[in-house]
Length: 100
Picture 1 (cartoon, rainbow, N blue to C red):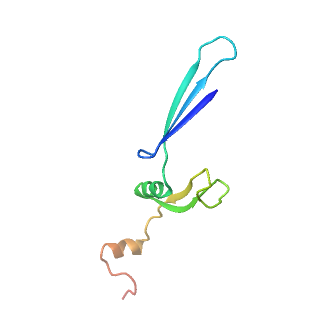
Picture 2 (picture 1 turned 90 degrees about the vertical axis):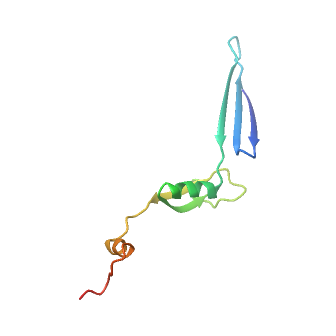
Picture 3 (picture 1 turned 60 degrees about the horizontal axis):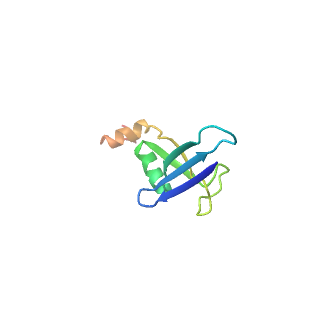
């Protein structure tokens, strides 16, 4: 199997071509994949826009820090917790707190 990779820095696309030649007779098979590579900041912004809270950005599934040497980008996110009743009232302009 032969693999050829090209990266377009302008579009952040990694194109990988595969060529599989059988050991005997048979057709040569080829396949191509295209992947968009995201930076940590881009991915975190998309996750926040989807309504989630980013809790951590890591460089591998074992939790190591993200740096220029890591092969992975792991983003840990959770659903946003609903605001408390008092917080909702404050945002609506109500007075909250000390009562009569």
